[in-house]
Image (cartoon, rainbow, N blue to C red):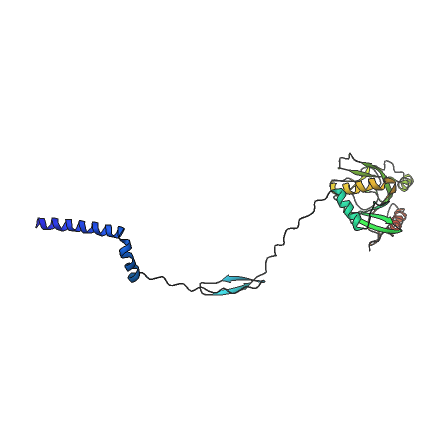
Length: 277
């Protein structure tokens, strides 16, 4: 009995060993039969044919067996980035002049500073016609509407002026001096016994001011260069509380400075020919 058990164990070990060798090294023999009789390809899952979405809609799948179009506001289309030309101040100025049919630099300039609108307009006169060259927005503002009366009141003057000098060494990049006070300012101050009227009113760069007109560094470079070409003796500066071509200022009887009516009438008359088409 003992020998029978021993022989059975040896037979089992030998059989398993041979079976393992056949499995490992005889796969070319047995695997084709196994694949033919016992292996089946998995069935392909049915897939939905998605609806073709319109440009104004977004396709959304709801559940495994249903497709649904949900209308949504389309996101803004991504336009190609606009590559801005990098121009120097002189190039920008020449482009502005070329747009107004100037082959050479103009022979005169009129600068109109509008305090309420915070715009500095640049004009010239050619062949009897007034031509609007460009505008420069104020980059800062101080004071209120109304003329300048004294030093330190933070007011931008109002009246008809010229350019006194150009300053290439300004702490505000570049600057152009407005020759305030003019004869009218001095005459009214004398009538009212006012002294110390202030001075050094500038059109300059940067974005800070106390009673001057800042237009930013890049814009003052354009205007400064143009002023050099034109000559400061050929530049007029009109500083107004509002654009009198579109608005009026009501001077009441309670106003302490009745001469404002005459001043504003003069400014309005000076501005009248400068009408953009």
